[in-house]
Image (cartoon, rainbow, N blue to C red; front, side, top):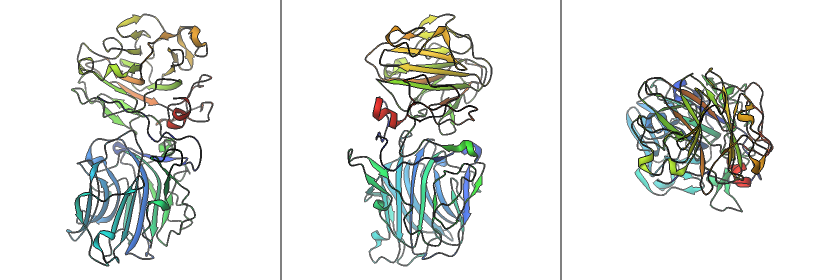
Length: 479
């Protein structure tokens, strides 16, 4: 089974997107705005970046406009994992494009442009769709609107980001960034992005502030934590924020992609519940053990992450290699197999007593227990010297010193020749266990705030000197 490495690994040059907005379906997060009279209802362009979290189709509601299910235009990830753009009016389907391509990668940012112009004489020119800078020309379903059709998008009607007409119970799970709506023009992808000159297969955003937005146009950059729906186009088409707070403002963006947990990893018996952009994990019920790993793996450099204990029961937290999950026999989640104690090449801190398990070998009394809700385990992974360190609430255990290099003061030694992933698991078969992970863009409030030496990440405790948060800008430099 292939493992996922970081995507869009470009250096810290050119235009940078500072923030995204993290939507959580369990919190019914969404934005809404009723637009005014359009510049031209027959022409518009939507551009946005997204990074999905859920593997459930009902959590793929990206952008919609309308009044009810019989009168709605929508841009969604269909339950088939295909991108779908469709419109219904009085229960009649006016148009529908559904891609052949699947959108299942929870580790990657996608850029989508949908450009509409129903004045075009050629039907296929009335809707153009671009993904990561390339026009989509092959569709599983392909129905174009009639000439001069005026859709619900760009009309004086309710528009939503992150839900389906607000009444269906369907809410988006994932991140969105650089949401741009152009009223009155059909633009192509080059108005919003470009291919990187050094890595020509990588599509990246450009500054869109100089575009002509039109009367109903807006630009949501999510940079104002106290006004997440603020339109910075100059039109003041501000969106109303529903159930989203400043905690949902993220630095995980299309120009600096942070690691999250990976729900694609384990299609086995005990599937956990993921939330908050795949930064929170818990058992679905008193059903059994589970495991998950970071979407980004590393084989060099020094890396730091934090795990917050959200319940007092039986957490296994640390790192593992690709060997822990590429062989089916080592990944069966049952009463005899779990991270650290049974899984090959996994190195885990057991929160209940502070023991460290290294591929079945137990270092008893390595550190203190972390059984209070809110305790934070820091994990410092040194792949230059192949050492691993653990801290409790900022204090490294076993008198560990992550800056001690090859000496490895207080460290656990780990083998060379592997790609390592941060890992989280649940040991209990009869209790709930919940953990929040922080790879640098946390889903929970940080009381202090500590970045790495590159200025990336937001951690509760100081990042050891020479260690970095797990994101693609750092990966491009140190990975």
